[in-house]
Length: 83
Image (cartoon, rainbow, N blue to C red; front, side):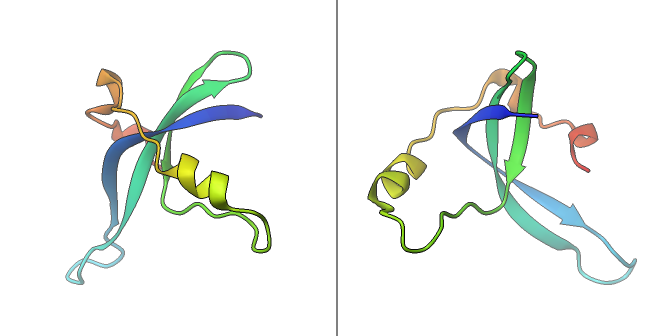
């Protein structure tokens, strides 16, 4: 599958409680929205993104700062979307 995604300004915290009584383990993820090559709308939770060392990263780093407001559907991220 191929998808094209765009970064949004929305950050969500994915929390996993592995054992009752212990602190929750959580990680902040940026919400990205996009489409599959067949036009299905998707939402992705991306905790980290990187490029290979040794590449010219100036354009990558500049584009990584570009974010748009999320769509209304992402304002309440559905829990069913989290694996």
